[in-house]
Image (cartoon, rainbow, N blue to C red; front, side):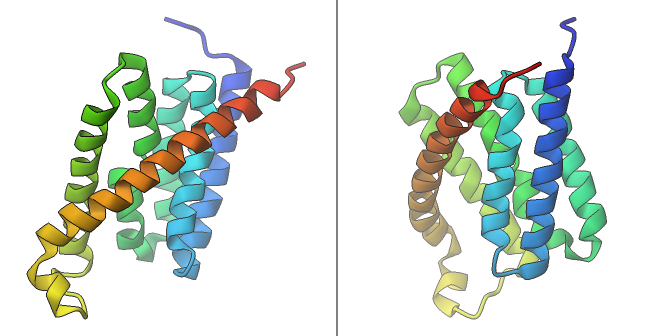
Length: 174
């Protein structure tokens, strides 16, 4: 078994701390909820920049637990992060590692996003919103607009991954 370096542990701890802060702020400010999801995902990319999948998993699990503790009354606000957004950087890393074709991976991840958002809609909004059209046609709405949003989101997250990798590679260890 590969020994984990103190550097990887520090990156994982930093990722966990930043992701927990971003999620907590997003949950309590509500208007910044999606921003909190995105910033937490970006923070969780730190261990992945050093190819530490184990560090990512520990940071993700700790972030979910700490965010639930800090925002216990807001479980449903954290649900999208737990079932999709928090796992997305890891899935992207595994996609690159296994060299799955981009189109096939994007279709699979878009379906995962659509199913996750449907479940969130079902549980969080109790299957009703204030827009009757959306309530009646939720599946086509998610498949079309959710998938279009996901393609943009996935592109942005891949660009952020490149920036995070460049940032972490410049950090000097002493």
